[in-house]
Image (cartoon, rainbow, N blue to C red):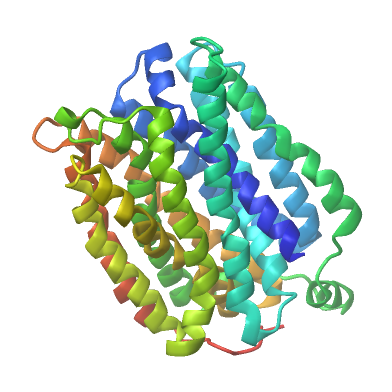
Length: 402
């Protein structure tokens, strides 16, 4: 189950990041600017909030594994659809629809892992699942370098990159054959207890406050994350005179891949660091380090050596804190509404964070800012997340509520 969730999240990341890697080519082909490029990213993330709600509900009613299959099929087929785009509007529609599956995949996979691992190992297991994002990011970077530059397929090479994004659909065959539903969900379904409306539970008198606060926490951190990492490939490829690092796609991959290797180890190590110093302290430590590094990184475009040295550290701190979310959100909500609650908080938060690509893109287009300076805005949202975690209950080591 952990392998299925990790691979699903890895493929989800790959399909989303393919667009990030090909922004430059799409801007030239469809003739749009950074603000429009950011808007396309924002639309995908906004729709992913709806996907989290829809498929979270599906996972609670029909099963975690079934929902995982539907989400992977959804974003795979939409990537294939994006390859057929003839106009900017068509591209926007396909990327928006891809967001449905993207948002639902995390809710399904996180519930699947949270309900099959004991409390003392739950955060580490979620960290393993989350680490799939870094691998997917690297796969997208490598695929873009090979298809766009090495193979030299012409000005429409981006279409083949999106065709490659349909490959995850074949993975669902293995999930359907090999992955059972979690025991706690099966027992709940067969208990004879009437099925309650999960939204009535989440916004009832007992849970509405934590539902809202969890959404704000996720929103703050996803604004920081998407504002930074959506535009990072663009920052590396932007000319120095415009505030970027002035690299080609091939050369920028040499910086992105070490950063994502750092992210991979950040995801994996978070649970172990949390065991040593506590989950809240580990969470705050990662966020404060990320907040301090972003403005430094954004102002060092003329020093490739420093960018290379700081990249893995920024990747480590700027990703690892996400390993808290799966287990933490699972512990906040009961089984009858767990996947819906996780999907709501994480993906409605992603909907709030969806404003980040547009905001950073708009600021980057202003001459007095430039993309490097615009990225520094994300530090404030990392710090806001470090404060919001203390407004929610500490559920470390507690069993899941049936």
